Image (cartoon, rainbow, N blue to C red; front, side, top):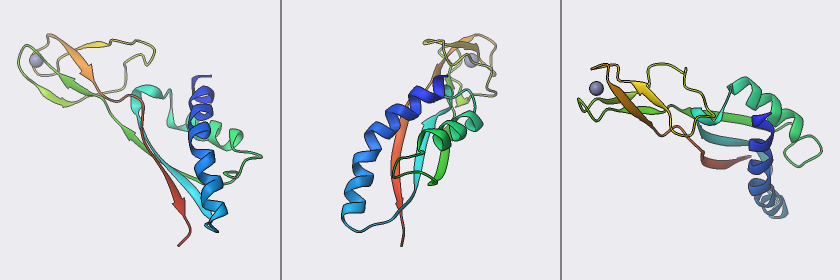
Length: 124
Ligand SMILES: [Zn+2]
C-alpha cells in the first residue's frame, strides 16, 4: 500500500509538532495536507490510511483536510501549458509523458508530486 508509507512519513514529520502544540496547551483538531495528485492512488485510500494509522497517536480522530494538486501539461511543441485533462497517468512512472491536448504531440507532465504543505489545525 503506497498510501501507508506516505502517511508514515507524514506522521513522522508532523507528530513532534503536535506534541509541541499540546505542550503549549493548544488543541490540535486536524491536519491540512496539500499533496500532488500523482502521489495518490485515491483520496479515499489516503483518508482511510490516515484514519487507521493515527489510531493511538495524538492525531487519532483528527480531521483531515486534503487539497490535491493536479499535475500540468507543458508542451515543448506548441507551448500549451495547462491542467492535466484527466488522471490516467501511472503514479509509479517517474517520468510520465502524455499527448498534448492542444497539438497531439508528446508533452511532459509537470508538478502534482510530493507533499507540498502540512499544517496543523488548532482549536480557536
Ligand atoms: Zn502541444
